[in-house]
Image (cartoon, rainbow, N blue to C red; front, top):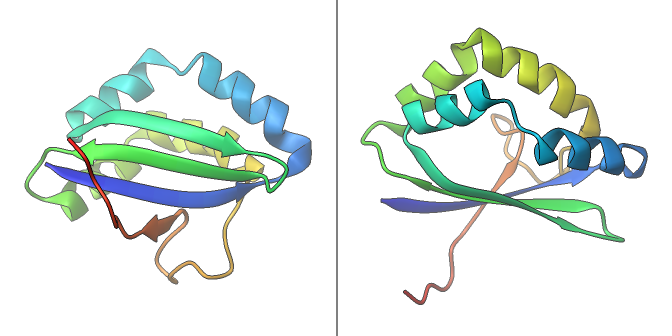
Length: 109
């Protein structure tokens, strides 16, 4: 199991919409996360900086393949069409990232 943290900005004018979307995530999206070995997924909002912090645990053995599988799902693409306009990627993110990956520096079980 691998713990993963990531961060992205959220446009202030879309915060209410982003909260609304995530208050009622489609069951098919939740299933796609499970099918791609993602568990314990949480997203936190920090205002007034307007940052979203995401955390999940990856329990699979091929992260790249599972992320490609998820990205290729039509339901994921539909969901992203709603969520992506709300998000503001960090300038410091890697070129191949949307959410910027974070280094885990502490864990207490």
